[in-house]
Image 1 (spheres, rainbow, N blue to C red):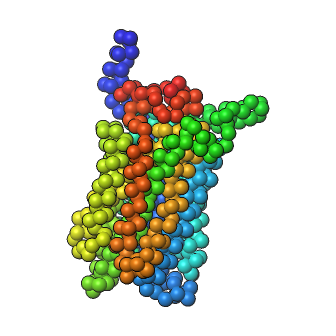
Image 2 (cartoon, rainbow, N blue to C red):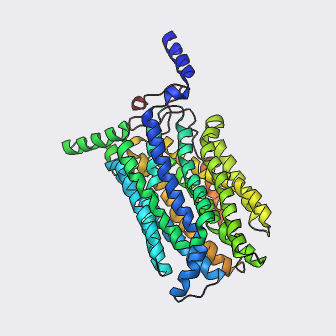
Image 3 (spheres, rainbow, N blue to C red):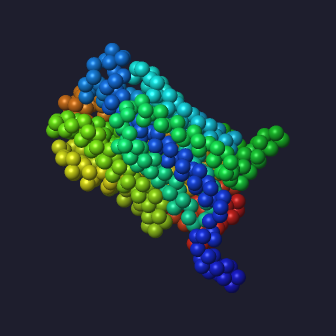
Length: 467
């Protein structure tokens, strides 16, 4: 007992520099860059959505108007999110059967190549098809990256590492906003072509990011049992297991949380650039002023998002996962209700955007930090992907419906329509009410309870194989 106490004190003195290994830093770097470049490519599209539709709709025999830009632009976003949802489930399952890093590289190549290919589209439906295929690959990064982080960072810094990884997405949005401010005048096709940059990351991941021992062991042991004809209940198809006890409750809980966060985020992030453009048209701003205000609002939104993404894990380690969800969901609801249903000037938008970014990105970060903590190793990537992909199937309709109801019910007012759709995000709060608190607990394993009942001693790395 005395020896254990002494070891704990020595571990506490050692600090994070001694506790965090080179392999953990490499996993964090690779997943953060992958998620960041995913965000970079995705944000480029939302920033050029209006100009792209203005050029492609006439080629498709459709008149250009705020309502048609809202409808067909929303449809391309919906196709992307539907691809993201489907790709997330398919590749998440494959990651549990064939390994995290191998599937991650395939996904990165897919979204990079097909996002850049959108630069050659001539009609809105060609663009929509390319966005759908890009979405298939884009759905891989977050669930597989979250599983890699959770399984590699086996100490008390797990949630913080997850938050830092997730902040890469907002950083990608932030960088895209800067690039748009500097090079947006070169046209939307040039901007989309830049999205091929993430393909470079594949080399880094294949060279430096290794498969976590836990997932590699789970895959190997499953194959050995299958060859020997001694399969167990935990070897059943991973998606089927998510709908049986004891995994049904965390599946429903995480799905509700992710769906609420995603609906609010995509409804806002898709349409605020177009809302500001319409504000500028009404106030007779010059094209340069419109582009400048859109870029600056995006920079502020994503600057807040970087903080929200990264800070969620630190806050959750202090006050718990459930209270942190309540904080970010609640703050996001207040900011949306204040900003979008009313006629606000550009100064108000610029003041509120970083707060909104902190809240919306923070809730997304929480969904990917919390979900790995309630599922065992052999289904973890599939579970993270499924819960978030179901949310994306619902979310896919958000931008489309916002564009439709703006024209049908609110005389083209995208602000009111965005607020109405974003309000559906309250489903995330319902999920939080049923969520188990996981602060201070080790990751569950296939041989342990899936509700994470093994505590982590601060400063001590737990042996998760015995958790």
